[in-house]
Image (cartoon, rainbow, N blue to C red; front, side, top):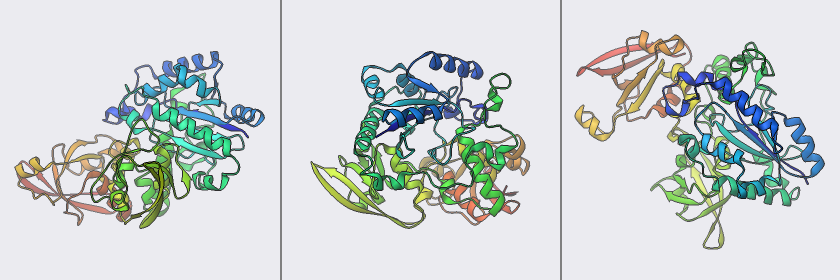
Length: 445
C-alpha cells in the first residue's frame, strides 16, 4: 500500500495586494520570499520541491502515503502553521517520516483531476495513496485568520487519521469515493480560457517570476467567470464555496479533527440532535480527517438535502440525519474570501458592504428586520469602479437592492444578485446619505 502526502504552496499573491482586508496582507519582497523558500526546501532532504511526479513515483515504489502541501509563500495568512510544519518539530517529524512529502508553490500546472480543495486558503494539505486515490483534505480558516497561529494539533490528528485510512486501503476504497475530485472541463489551470492567454504551464524563474504565477484563488475566479460568460449566472456552490461548519450551526474544537465545541440553537445541526462534545467521524459514509473534509461534503451538497452523520458520543457510535433546507448555503459567510473580491465587482459594482448592527439601525431609525448595508469601501478602478461611476459613495447605507428590502448580509445579497441578474442588467437601489434617501442604479457585470 502506498500513500502520498503533498503540501501545496501557491507561491505568489500579486492580486491580493488590491484587496482591503487583513487576510490579503503580503510580505514586501514577494519574489525574494519565493526564491528563499525554494533554496531552503531544495537544500533539505524532507520535501520534494514543486515536483508532484517524483513524489507520486516514490509513493508507488515505497508504499508510503503522499502528503502534498500548497502554500502561498508571500501571503502572511497561515504563515504560522506553514513555519511550524517546515521546522518539523519532534512530534511532526516522526509523523512526516511515514509519508512522501511534496511542496507545491504555484497552480499553473496543478492537476485538477486530483487537486480540488478550498482555493481561497493560502495553506492546504492533501493526502493521497500512490495510485492517486485521495484520502482527505486539510485546511484551516482559524490559521487563515491568524498568521501567528502556530498550532499543529489538528494537522497532526489529520495525519494520524490519514495513516489509519492508508493502513486499511484498499478494503475501504468504496468509502473514499465521495472524496475524489469531480470532473472539470480542464485538466490544468493554464488551460482554462480565462487564464490560458496570460499564463504558461511553468513559472518563469529567469524573468517575471511573480507575474508568471497562477494563484490558487484564480482557479475559483476562472471557474466563476466561465459560468458567468457562458450562462450569465454562477452556480450556488461557486458563490458559497466550501462552507465552514458554522454554516450548518457547528463550531468545532481547533485542536481536533471534528469534535463539536458548540451548536447554534435552531440550526440544522441542533435539529439533527448533535451536541457539544460529540465527535463527528463520518458524513455520508465518508471518513473525516479534518474540518476541511466536512467543507468538501458541504461544497458538493446543493439545495434541500439530507446528510447522514456518524458520530461518537460517550464511547458509543450514533447515526443521525441532518436536513438542509434551501437556501441554506446563503448563510455561509464569504466576506473574508479572496474570491469574493471578484464577486463584489460582478454583483455590487465594486462595493464592500457591512450590515449595520442593532444599535446602528436604531440610530438610523431602521427596523431590525430591514436591509441596512453600510458601504465601507467603494472601488475606484476598472470593473470595481462601476458603483462609484453610478454615484455610490463610501458611507452610503443601502436599504433596498432591486426588490430586496428585508434584512440581508453582504454574502446573501451577492448570491441573490449573481443568480438573478445577468451581465448588463440594471439594478436599482435605495440608499441613505446625509439623512436623506436617494435612488441610484448600476449594471451587473
